[in-house]
Length: 89
Image (cartoon, rainbow, N blue to C red; front, side, top):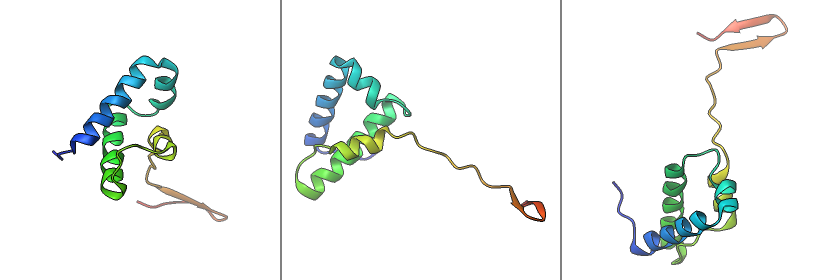
């Protein structure tokens, strides 16, 4: 398990506190991921920011990146051409 800096954990608690008090923000940001996944991503981005520029705060773009649902691509098993479909198995 990765150890996070104190500044990151303090920032994470601030984000948690804000989202607990603001239902609209919570509903907006925590969708497409579980609550645990959301906070884990906040920790990861926060740690990276702290290492890069000395500040753990996330940008709006980083929050949006976490918020976006992750699209899982299924392996393609057939291809279709003008000659018909072909199995890739």
